[in-house]
Length: 203
Image 1 (cartoon, one colour):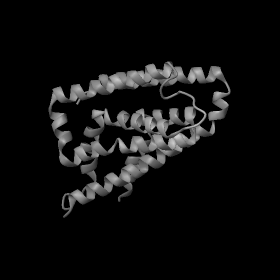
Image 2 (cartoon, rainbow, N blue to C red):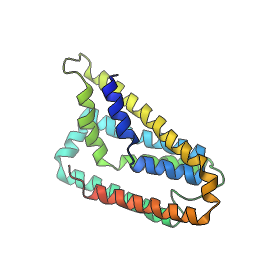
Image 3 (cartoon, rainbow, N blue to C red):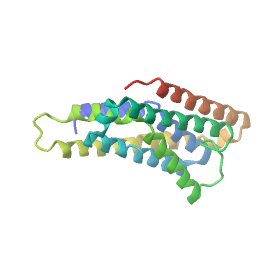
């Protein structure tokens, strides 16, 4: 794998977005294990987009205005739902003492949906992956699968780093109700801002 690909992938992955935001929220509200689960879920949420890009489905999404708009507004609605849940202390920033099997499943499902309902991700991979496949490559599909696997691995590692940092300061945060309330409002505002950004996104 080329250095150019690794650097570009790291820049894209480390840039704040819905996945990073949710992983941070999971670490702050539920601890280290929940942050790892959230990172894993966000990584799994990339799979459909990569598959779509490799199979060319993303090209259809890009070409069809109606399909793109429908998919986009589903994502916007879900981000607004997360913002509302955060304010009600029932969503990403619900503080639990422990993370059981049920809550781990909830964290994973939410993380997958966050990345799944983002049409720009499919279009990104449609434009991103082919750039790093040589035109004379005898096995372009294998090359794209390898690049996709590396991208997912980097995503998981970087997101776990974000989440573990958030978990490390969790006790200090939850011991201060005012700080926790401010964080809830900040995360809710961030989800709304990301939803607005997606709402005005063009193909």
